[in-house]
Length: 508
Image 1 (tube, helix red, strand yellow):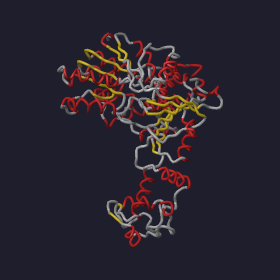
Image 2 (cartoon, rainbow, N blue to C red):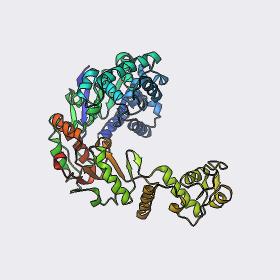
Image 3 (tube, rainbow, N blue to C red):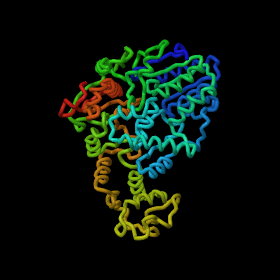
Image 4 (cartoon, rainbow, N blue to C red):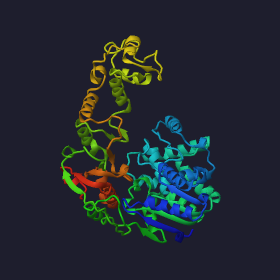
């Protein structure tokens, strides 16, 4: 392995490091390097897809021309000899867990998905087992370093049982893909003229082993990342490895996101990080605004895009209730604040009562919020005589399909089985004029879940959970990096929500 092959591209927030990598891909293709001699390894399946689409559009290619534009996991799977049918599925974890009397529920996102997801599996046992393997450390050491209620004997037994189960049925999990490739797949690694790895600061030790196999088989490799934004150490990320790479590096110097007034604050937080590469970048010319409030009720969310961020989810509970009471549409925990089913029901009823036809499927959704005997005749709740694709009017529903509700009833009168909380929220949404089917402008998220995102305005809760307070004592760099990421998501305005007890708050 020759480290001098590696060239790092440091991309401070909003400087376009992914675009810088893709521009180098364009240069390589323009210079005549064959598409199948280029490797591009993205952090997520979506990012990999976007890179493929860009190259295909600019150079009149098809996806098959770019076989090595992948996530590291899918790359390892392709060269490891593991077949798709050999990959552990949720039902396998459930079956083993039932046999052992343990919670081993685990979501397999597939070989083409993210390097790791910020949403942990349901099972703390599986989480600890996989984390030890990604970090390449003994399970006992991982256990001793973890703040967990899991019993060591239980964890040890689960790990042995999982290994035995996989061997018995010749199955492989998500981490096995990487281990098998590093152990057996290296001789089959393609010889590449150029390779690119995005979000390199988030690679775990095991993922770095995969990356270095690629490096050994590449004439040149570019790694893009930002050590100041390395916030996934809890998931095994090894930022120290990224920082410690030999070879040259470049720093992108112009942010297209961070406004001028937020930039000094962000720099102040970054300088608290003890182990980092010193770097400078220029902010946008737009000044932006910074203010502090006791809660979100003081903030007008009427215009633009928004991120409402917190270190822990429970800090967001007040914001959820506040936004609902004021009739704002938003997303939270990756779900819309009004379910698709409920919005379809309200829209469906309002259409049909105004004389328009709706599908049988839409009518069935409407009926699900109506009470039998009051709005729907007994025996008609599931519309047994209507297919999903059939078009039906309110008159036909009344004459043939058991509808008692009449066209003079607006949605909350007709749909009488709505919970009071939903009724109040929909009323507030309609009063504000929100469109149910619109993409929410407001997103509530943990800071971890916001990485890579941006918005016109950011609302940041500065409160720290007990675990984060402990981290401030043991690993303060983790918390500094987290809040650095948070404040640099904004393109315009930054609002702080500070707790009453400032001793439990991150000092901005």
